[in-house]
Image (cartoon, rainbow, N blue to C red):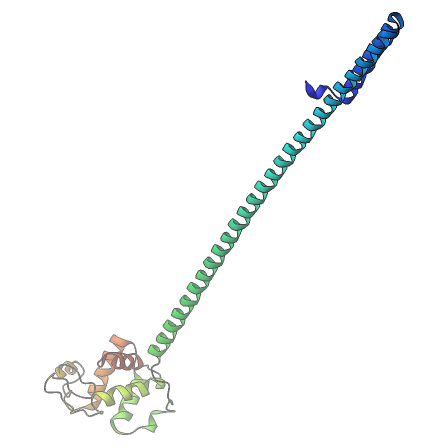
Length: 236
C-alpha cells in the first residue's frame, strides 16, 4: 500500500484537504484560518514523509534488482567457464585419440614394411651377380647348373644352389657324414633315398643332383628358398 502513496497521490490529498480547509474558513472566520494553516502544514509534512518512504523503497528495490542481476551474471560466467573447460578437455581427448591412431598406423606400416622386406629377402636371399649361362662353371657345378635349368628353374637360382651345396658338401659326391648318415652332394639323410633316381646314387653326381633338385622343389619351391632356410636354421 505504501507504494500506492506516490507523489501524485500525496499532492492530490493535500490539495483536497486544503480545499476543505478553505471552505471551512469561509464560514468559521479568522480563528479557523489559523487552524487551517496548521492542518495544511501537517498534511505537507505527511506528504514529505510518504515521499521519503517511497524513495527509500524504490532505492531498496533497485538494490535488490542490481544484486539479482549481478548474481545472474556471475552464474552465467560460471557456466561459460565450465563449458570452456569441458570443450578444452574434449579437444585434449580428441588430440590424444588422434595421436594414438597415428602411432598405431605408423607401427602397422613399420610392421608391414618389415614383413615385406623379410618376405623379399626370403624369396631372394641372394642379391649378387647372376651368371649369364652355365658355361661360367665347370665340373659338378656345371652339371648342377644344367640340370637345374632343365628342371625349369631360372639361372638366377643357381647362385643360391651353389652356396647351399658348397656349404653342405663342397659339391663332392663322396662326401659322407658318419654320425648322421648324410651322403653326397645334397647330403641326403640317409643317402639311400637317392636310389629312387638311380642305383648309382653313391657316386654319380648327376643322380645325386637330380634327387636333390626334386627334394628342394617339393619342400622349398626353389633353391633360393632352400638357401634361405639353411641360413636361418643351419639345415635344409
